[in-house]
Image (cartoon, rainbow, N blue to C red; front, side):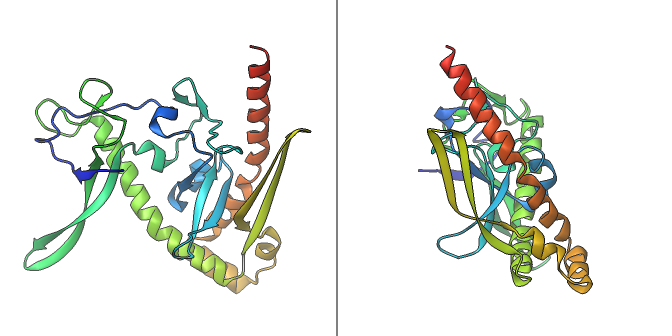
Length: 246
């Protein structure tokens, strides 16, 4: 259960956040949500795929981290072994909330930072300080604020982007079949990707519409990222080999 509360520098003046990674923090998952605003970084290391939300039916994008359940091949000795950590992970125990504010008689909705006080990352003795001794934001909190802004923007962009790609018939189901060894195989279902063939056959007007909306690059990055499935297989094989040699 999460317990999000509004973050403030009085109540949480001594708050610290443990920033290492591991099973104890819930990082042992084989996929995590990612957003179009971070695709350029994500696609360098992770396969990006789409899934459908069971309730809304909307497409959402995820980065594949492993094949088996509760397997994150990027976790290693408390570190996340990658040059880029997806924003939803890097944000730690922080979330975006909204509050209403009266500005010159007009009610406006503005984003504010909440913190999950039930997160195992929360501490008062270990980790990165959230606030400076005199109450200002720490460099760590400034980084988190930037990450949360990217997530918030990415959620809006993703919704309209996937609607546009779907309207052009570019989203198609994909089954990822992985053979690590003869006796260890995985069949990942319920996932979607962008059809490279259909994208290549779009007429000029449709391509221009996607490009002007800023969605064409995202489609190409989704396709390009699938080459990282092979990298994941290699990571899995190296880990199994290392385990067998212990």
